[in-house]
Image (cartoon, rainbow, N blue to C red):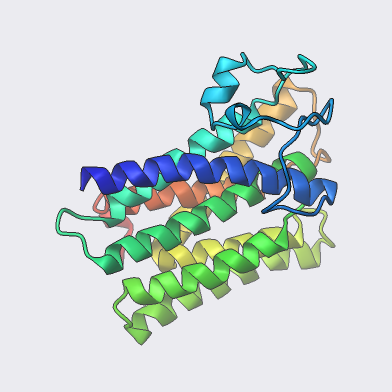
Length: 262
């Protein structure tokens, strides 16, 4: 059990390093996401293998490129660390003491979805745009994972589909009727994945958390950062953050909100 969870943690950190490459190369339009060599974003020098060790290389180099001494974005160790933590949480939540091959497969698929959604979160924060390829990938994988997780129970699976469609339509309507002034169309697709992954009740909790935190951050930016109501703030990261928190609640504190259930 411990070894399986440890493998998820280490594998997650490694995947996090790959996610940084994906985020950068989608934005830059560079090809070779899988096979292209890593290089410094400032001096373009190709990096040695020991400059690419997740988290550790950043610490060893004190956050600076070995060759040009320019600062390396904190995004890199953060994404690597967060991905490792996400994989660890999923492993603990979905792999029990008497784990089966199915448990490991489902945990692996959910971990991949969470990693893909982390790409969406970071990309939306940086570029105010949702990379739809990550959304499509997440929707397909999470649908398969949930169907397996509910033991091929079609009725239970339909509940997840309904939650996905309801979540999508709710946020899509805001985008449609405001002509994307209130939020972008991409937020509706993110909400679809959230609903599909969590089902009706926990999707509602995730979306509620997203609205609350988004509102609080918006008010704080207006008060302390001199922003106004017209300032564009990406809502996708709040939706994805709400999904992560709701997943933790449903996995480790499933009875915490029983009073809200019908």
